[in-house]
Amino acid sequence: MAVTREKPTAVSIRNVSKSYWRGSQVVPVLENLSFDIGQGEFLALMGPSGSGKSTLLNLIAGIDSADAGAIIVDGVDIAHLGEAQLAAWRATHVGFIFQFYNLIPVLTAFENVELPLLLTPLSRRERREHVEAVLDLVGLTDRMEHYPAQLSGGQQQRVAIARAIVGDPTILVADEPTGDLDRISAGEILGLMARLNGEFGKTIVMVTHDPRAAEKAHIIRHLEKGVLYDVPP
Image (cartoon, rainbow, N blue to C red; front, side, top):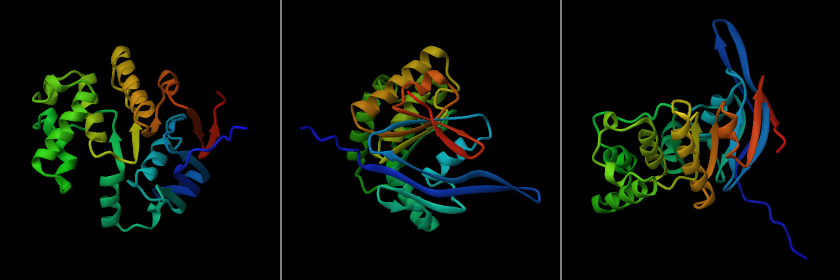
């Protein structure tokens, strides 16, 4: 008799709450959330603007801190890390993919991708090998000496993805990664993300408003008024 094994947990969210101050008023954004993300899972977070999607993504990535609860990533409760520890943890464990790419305009594609590796003990030759490998993976070997302004939106996002994965992070977090792209470019980026997940086993958490983007994910969760709902397949 075959035994079905659950995936190991990459991210464990337990009783997490988050509020912000608006003037003298406290505005709750997330309320007592608890859920897990398995290793190698591709999760899409959907919901209306202001529902807390990006806040939840930032908590998972260690960019923001929760008011209460635990956020355990790869066995580490990041809610209890100091600022210096958290910065070091992010550099090792999290790859960021943003809607507007966040590339540095005065650096080439190669230099943008290499940037996270400058904080590692890798030699210059090793950094070059890593950068060339990921640029080849995203199909931009022939564009590595180009500057962002010389690249299309889709190409810039592929550079951003290469930068996100060059350090082999535990988790990729993507905030509206196709929001600034035309339909064809968006499809190419989503195909690349699906390949990173399926072929390379990357755990991906993606915030999106686009149902077509969400369809690439294994699991879709809908966040509204601080409460998380599973979307039936």
